[in-house]
Image 1 (tube, helix red, strand yellow):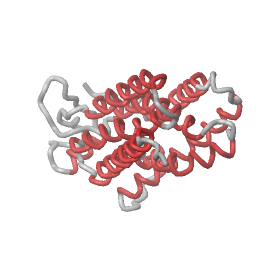
Image 2 (tube, rainbow, N blue to C red):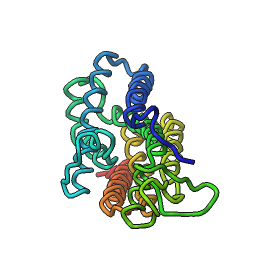
Image 3 (cartoon, rainbow, N blue to C red):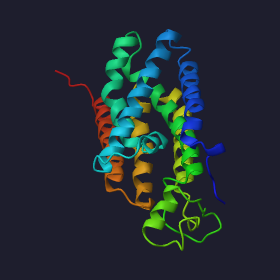
Image 4 (cartoon, rainbow, N blue to C red):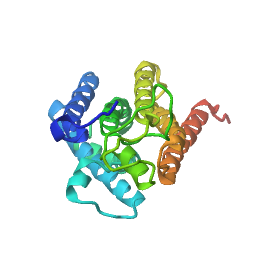
Length: 258
């Protein structure tokens, strides 16, 4: 199987608009009982999407030693999730207070976390079709081969593993599909747990723990392996766990009597 772009187009550029529309629609629909302005919610999401894309691009450049590729290649891909997550965590609260001051920040983060989980599951479709974010070479029936020009092909061609430049890549572990399944399962769990949450912000913390924790573990299977991607995801998961445990401890701590 050789997934390729549609009519010469890169799949990230083909799918990014539908995914953005889905994320906006999902976010607004989920907030329909929170008495917030739909227009303001749309503006907030557009700004956060821009911030996330810039963060993902900057983090990708950082992992590449700030090596710029031709503009066509930079537009085609080169986005790293940890950068998007860090950018949203850093600037999301400021944008929320500015645009939707009536919406509690912690509740906004809860809904955003569920939206992001499903959105990133859809983003992995472009990874699958472009042949990026794959694992090591394997020979199992579920392993996939990618056409010349894909990231999987490039890694193997650079390593001298292919007989000629037009030869497709050897089959590799479809790690992007595992990433997709992990994001989708986390999103479903968060939706189920949301009505049962103990406090606003708990869903966002569970997102960091589960989604970034799973991603951090799966990063060990990526080929080529990128240490910073794994460490960043595991660090964010650990921070979420520490904050959640501290909040639960404070909530269960008995009040002191005089």
